Image (cartoon, rainbow, N blue to C red; front, side, top):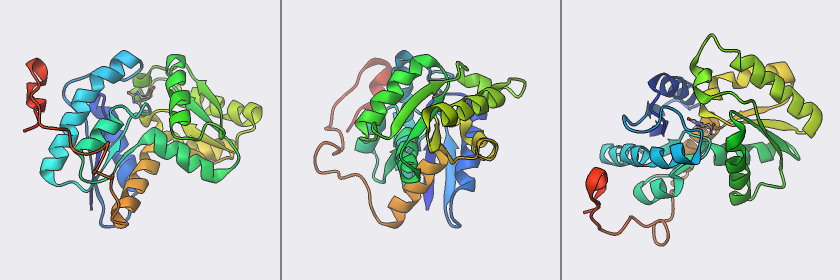
Length: 244
Ligand SMILES: O=C(O)C[C@H]1NC(=O)NC1=O
């Protein structure tokens, strides 16, 4: 089985870490390839970044289709372009926020999301509502850490995130924590050991979800809303997105 994990931002070092975490979570016989587009934002921290990340994401999904990939992970906590990717992909497409939130609902009565910047909290709440898990989501907490600080070994990001997770358990009464950034994937085990509750990382949760869906022979229903886009031309910088 081949799973393509797409980091929609353009920071290759983050893509590499994401790919290593995803591959480590899979069963024998599953190969993960992690990629990022060469066009788009270095990190996704706003609606503007998210909008500008989607074309690059979709170009990687289209490339995966040409390569015959079995399934896809959208490795960004805003699940950008998830619905559009599902229209393009033959196999299942799972976003890390959806996978992490749904996984956390199996672990207790409530979870807290711990994410990067406060300005992204609204999106996390919107996604909890979209995915029907808002009654499980007790809080969305921001560490006020820029996404790329997670890639800086000299930053104190790990400690700051760990302490925010500890506060979430103490103050929100949450049974589990959801890490609100793909760049936190490698912190999951460390934080869980430090705070004593399950910590869910969306990269590994989404990768295992895709693996299970492929094993079950399940994919997005392609007869209605998620049918392939109708043939159409796109102009200017998007001309390569034309659907023949
Ligand atoms: O929304 C966030 O803060 C996290 C999100 N941004 C990013 O570049 N990768 C992510 O997972």
